[in-house]
Length: 184
Image (cartoon, rainbow, N blue to C red; front, top):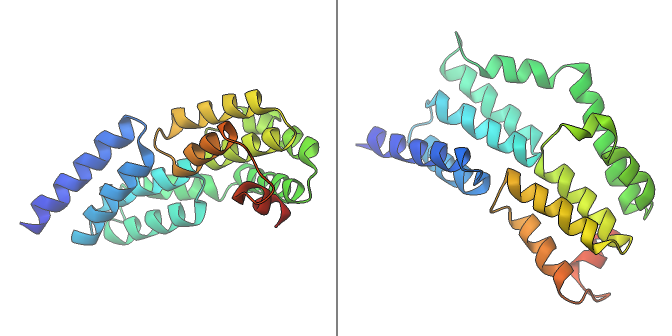
């Protein structure tokens, strides 16, 4: 019975992920793996969802758990291998540099990094969100909203993206969480 329920949650997560409801898919996949920890397919999909959100450490964790459940013929080894390549590590360093520049209020430099060719084909929600925040901090609300619209194509229900859009459409006051984040 638990296996049936775990399979139900896995299939719900799979359906939601295919429909770009990544955050909601993760909720279902977490239920599936809580009920059936050895569900390597749910763990692999969970890893992909974490990856698309930009939570690479959780993606790695899910894929490593998947490999403990099924070591042979498991795509998780490919995903982990991709993350350990120099190109991916360089991309993470560049993102972290853009994040640091944004916190230092050097938005133009952060935007330059996030708009570079290395990031052009990468569809990761956290990357898009940071780019939108940098545009908004420069007073370029329309560009920020455009970037966040692109982020919603990756994850329709992303709570951060939705919050950024909501905040940008309202009056941004100095006391808002947005101002505090950049002051941070």
